[in-house]
Amino acid sequence: MRTVEHLLAALAGSGVDDARIEIDGSEVPLLDGSAKDWVEAIAQVGVVAAGDSECQEAGEISSSWVLQEPVWVYQGDAFVAALPAPTIRFTYGIDFEQSAIGNQWYSWTPSQESFAEAIAPARTFGLVHQIEGLRNRGLIKGGSLENALVCDDSGWLNPPLRFSNEPVRHKLLDLVGDLSLLGTFPVAHFLAYKASHNLHIQLARALAQQIGASCVSCQGSVVSDS
Ligand SMILES: [Zn+2]
Image (cartoon, rainbow, N blue to C red; front, side, top):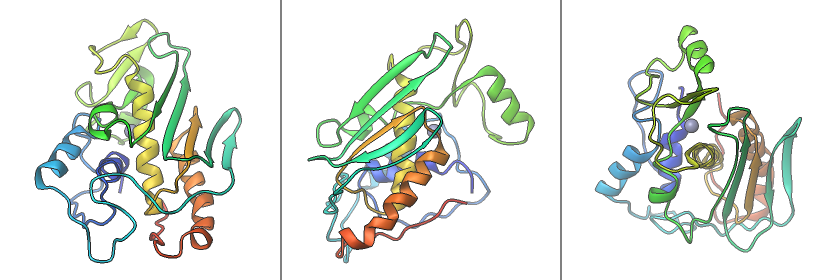
C-alpha cells in the first residue's frame, strides 16, 4: 500500500490510535497532497475512547511512555532523533538549493497548536524533475499540480502557498505519520533534519525496541513498513 503517511498522520494528529481502514486499490488517494481532508472528515464523525485504550485521551496526541535517553539515526548529514523532553514536540529542518524552498525550520508542540490548523493543510512538495521521474515510473498515479506544490530553480509553479514555510510543515506531517507506526508516541522531542521516510521509519524501529521496557500498560502494536 502506497502513500499511507498522510492518512496515518491525520489519524495520529486527531488522536486516533484505533481504526479499521478499508482501501480498494494500492495507493491511498493523495487528495490535495495534505492531510486536511482526512482531518476534516475525522472531525466530522468524531472520535471515541475505545474500551481498552487507557493511555490516550480521545482527540489529541498524548502518552504515558516517557523517553529516558536520546535515540537517533542518521545517514550522511541527515538525521532523526528523539530526545528526552517534558512534553511531546516535533522540530524539523530542511535545506534545498532551490531558493523557493531554501533553509526552513519549524517546531510544533501538539499541546499548544492544533494539528488541524498548523500541520494538516501543508501539502506535499517536489521539484519538477522528481515529479516527472516518479510519474514515468508509474508511481504517484494521481500526482499532478493539484496535489503537490511543485517548484523549479526559478520558483513555485503553482502558488500561492498556504504557509510561507509550507514545505517544512509538510515534512513534519510526514514524520508524525511515519512515527505513528509505533502505535503510541513517547513523550519526547523529535528532531529531524533533511530526513526521509526511510530514516523516519528507522527511528520508529529504534524506539519500538524500547517500548516494552518503558510502557507496560500501553504497548502499541508495532507495524513495520513494507
Ligand atoms: Zn508527505
